[in-house]
Image 1 (cartoon, rainbow, N blue to C red):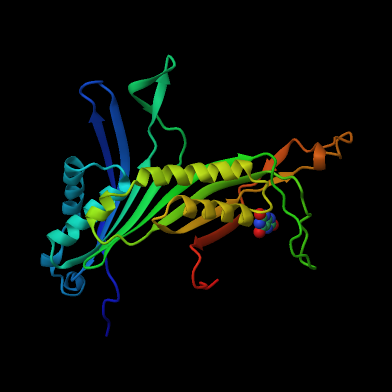
Image 2: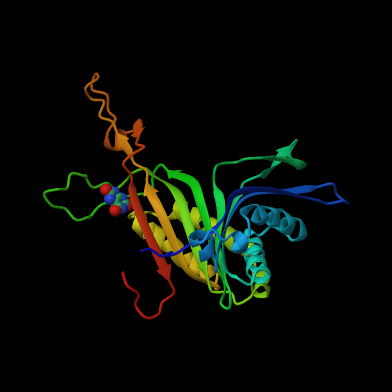
Length: 300
Ligand SMILES: O=c1[nH]c(=O)c2[nH]c(=O)[nH]c2[nH]1
């Protein structure tokens, strides 16, 4: 009558905190992550025959996360994701693939009396660093790194004109508008054949470059559209990180509407006189793209 089409299972929302204490200086470094593990393999009978003998319990996966976090660095998260994936496919012969997602939360060192404090940190925004990896037996590790929830706004230096017009078009052209978005940027690494290959890569430098490029272009570009600005970001990241195969962005266009206040004593608040705006929570534009290195034309 029926058969299992696809299955994977694991532990989600494993919260992890690790501190490194420099014995000489007394300086602590802290990392907080949220980990998801999903395993694939010869696990059909656990669904179809109530056969739990093939189940590596999700609690075991959680305990393993803690143990490997103790035995290995958990930063950069790309490498820890690969360590976890490697463990599951090499420890259990019937497990053939491990999907690992790690969200790294921000703990930024506090400055106190003008000096970096040795053991105090603060959350300087909701931005997260995300890694999604798949370790597949006999193939290697596929890794995608991401920046998410980085909220930015520029109060000028953005235009939108020359767009297609027809009888459905109401939007006026603008040469000066507010541009705000919550940055979601991803970069796909070339397939790594082994954990050893992964360990040689400077993922932190790539993350820093992607973040710097994103913010630099956001601020400096005389933006013709979200589309044109995000393409420049992708292009520069591809140039800066040779091991990256593709860069993608998903940018909501968070609109700020002008408010006509002329009904009140002729108050001027439109066009070049606009200073008070109404931020919109919805709807929002959503502009996405993936940019790859030049080669045979890909489908668009
Ligand atoms: O940068 C933009 N891209 C669009 O596609 C678009 N559409 C729209 O209404 N405003 C904007 N802005």
